[in-house]
Amino acid sequence: MPAVAKDSMIVIEQPKVKRGFSLSPRVILSYIILLLLTALYLGPLLMLLNTSVLSQRQFNRNATSLPEEIVLENYTDAWEEANFPQYLANSAFYATAATSIYVITAVFLAFPIARGYIRGGNFILTLFVIALFLPPALIPQFQLILNIGLYNTRPGYILLLLTNPIGIIILVSYLKSLPTELDEAAAMDGCGYVRFLITIIFPLARPAIATVVVLHAIGIWNELILATIYLTKQDFYPITRGMIVFQGVYGFNWPVLAAAVVMMSIPMVILYLFLQRYIISGLTAGSVKS
Image (cartoon, rainbow, N blue to C red):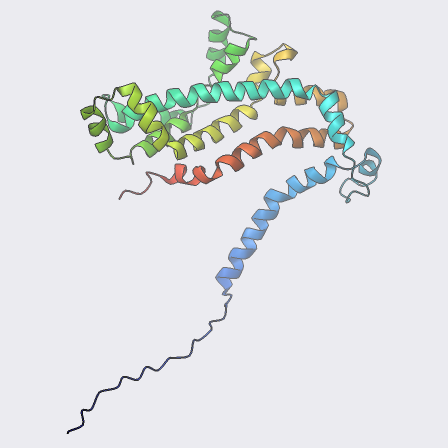
């Protein structure tokens, strides 16, 4: 019986070559630039945190030294002596109310512009872009608020915080990336315009809305000029205006001032940490066409 030869296949495994991590001059230069930028941004923050736990005596002796003893009483003194709860509550109220009203109205305005449902939508969007480069109209605003009787009132101050062109631009750019088939399907199902925006567009636009919320809330939280001009009653002061009053009284005690600044920054840091996963996608959506 003849033997049947079978072809055999020999598989030779090639040894894995470990590639070393090479540092080219361009990579080294990039790391150096990143380290310098990191030091530029984190340096003042670390200095502020360090100052906030120094004693007054050690600060007067050497303001840049590490704390010999961590003095947490600076935070309690700033909280109690600076009327911090009142100012913090005012800022939280202004930021929450103005941001909520702004986001709702901005989505209702940005959606028809993005879809082209109104005539001259591109021209209106161009006006918002131009508004980014214009100085604030303080004198007309002041005359308007004064004539309608809202000067030195909470509603009047909130009304001034409802203008932010960059939020409209971000929302229009993002809403353009949503498929128009959603509009047609909703119309065929008999879904009304307002219901369509609330139940479909708002959830889909969460990344852009989160970005606008963070940018708008931080702008309100750090606002000082409008608070100085339009609010003269101390009970209405936001945290930034209250810090000016606190500095005038405790300007010599820099550790307590530093502790107050740290506490003032914490709410916006927490807001950013909660919404950071939406921010990048909200800013970049619509920038590249598929």
